[in-house]
Length: 356
Image 1: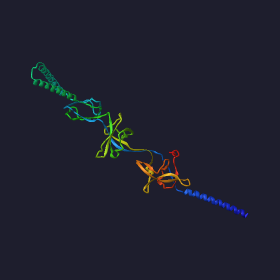
Image 2: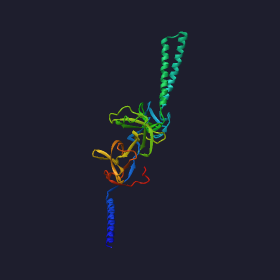
Image 3: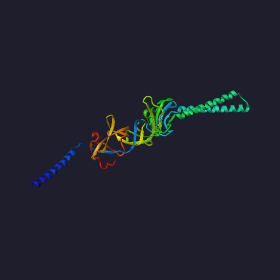
Image 4: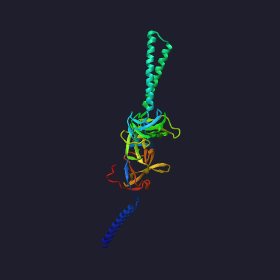
């Protein structure tokens, strides 16, 4: 009985010792420090960088129309803000004095013409009279005829007309006011073609080219981004602000205003099939740049692996990884700021996104 009892006690001791070692291992496992993380699969993508500049809306025709005759303004045919067609009269200047002058010149011209033709006939056909009288009559007729044509032009210019389709921005004189030749009277803004002009920093002179795509939006119309192309690139640099001029046309049919402020986004660089990550997951460590990727230790447990990387160009928060990462590496994103090389991690990826 004593031998059996001894063997029983020995077996129970061995069992208790094994359970203790298991519990101790489980306890040690629970004490291992882990960090909750999320990951992102690294896949090739297209990297692009842009520059944003500010431009202003202009029109191909924005002019001051000046009076071409002296006289008194007798009427407006349209008001400020009115849209006018090419050739439409905007302001009428009193032409009564010019009409009387034209009637006088018509009579003189008719008289000198008749005298010239009579002297010409008798001189050339009958040989009567002097050549000097004949020439004087010819010159008198031509001078009066020219003066008559000139007065007709002046009469035409008493109607100040629109030289193109546009909008009457400002009328600078009042009815009854006197105007003189060369005096500005109307500002007319063309409505057929609007454009945006902007200055681009000189360092992008090699990157920005004719026909490049450009995104445009206005501070008052943020949701309405327009997509157009550059139709003019300046050939010189402004020495004062070190920019070169670009232009892009605006689509017809929109309610643009001259001198509106526009935002332009121009692509300055593009590269396909590169590995791009966010700069917030890249860390500077011992004069090098590192990221953390998901790996396993010898026991098959998830750990963070510190990976040195070589950076390329960046734009906003995106940066190209030239070396150090491979396609389908799992970059540790959230939680990476708390990691060291080889640290145990617990992956908390959304199952629906785990394959992304």
